[in-house]
Length: 150
Image 1 (spheres, rainbow, N blue to C red):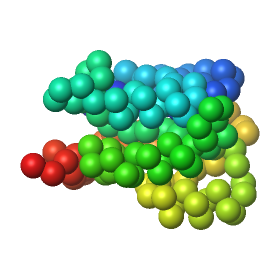
Image 2 (cartoon, rainbow, N blue to C red; image 1 turned 180 degrees about the vertical axis):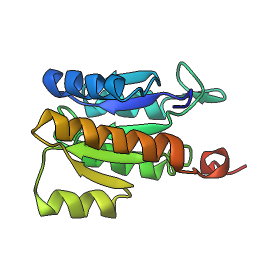
Image 3 (cartoon, rainbow, N blue to C red; image 1 turned 90 degrees about the horizontal axis):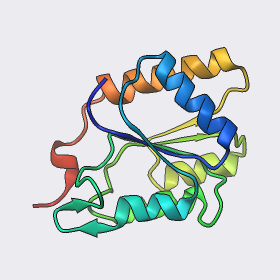
């Protein structure tokens, strides 16, 4: 869909495999970087070296963020992303199985762009991922230069 990576922050191996399979089946060919806990995600996104993010210098096009993560939970990851000038406008979709109203409210209050519950049924999950990819990677127009102050 575009050349930028997708960051998938997911600790459950089955959900990771399901998400990767759904992306492939929907022809989302972007590289997918997987981080399995919140600390890894924060380190990947916020550890700046010179001109940009460690390793690539380029932020991902989209973050798919689970909430229930080891070490640092998804809400804290979101809080840290929104606090950083380089990551403040990065599109973050909370992709979680949580049905807790409190999680939804906290996610949006912390700056989530979207909150999507993981459907249990694979066909529904496949359709949800298709729509996420279409919207966030094709239709959505992001801020110029990712909103980093110059």
